[in-house]
Length: 207
Image 1 (cartoon, one colour):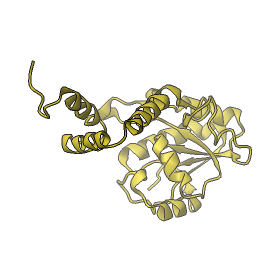
Image 2 (cartoon, rainbow, N blue to C red):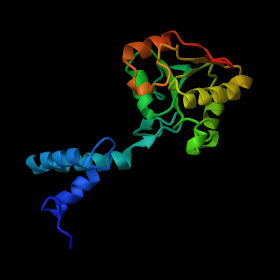
Image 3 (cartoon, rainbow, N blue to C red):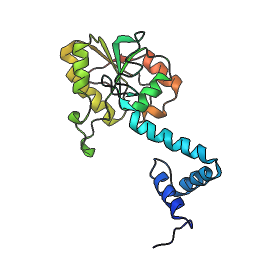
């Protein structure tokens, strides 16, 4: 058996698993593991149980594909939300980002990514068909494209715009106060909030 780099195969195993998390290198993983060792045993147990419960219990909303503890997320199930306006975002993180602005009172639709031929991601890999069906069936009058202003975001927005044209729904996009080429999650809340309020019609040439 090979010796553990940390004189403990158990610690080595914990560090190896923690370092698989995004943005966590081996040094940070070791620091986190040692921190957990210094805590009371029930603290580490609570953390482990919370992660397991989240993994087993969290679902994706059958309507908008946001995370949810039930079949329908809290936003979709809230009768106070504007059911005629849907904000289309790339990921669940973007729902959280837009909600933090307190400027959008409608619903959401999570695509699960952006069209990116170089990465092998096409329209059929995203929740675009379900978006079109929602617009047709739910009486949605406006679709806000809150996508990152990158080539992939613009390509995805243009494709959605073309798909929604026959429905008659108004398609708008965030005002270009959001920097070109930046990810939505890194945009400050004030800028993003103003972009939502000052959204503009989506056209064949969004630039």
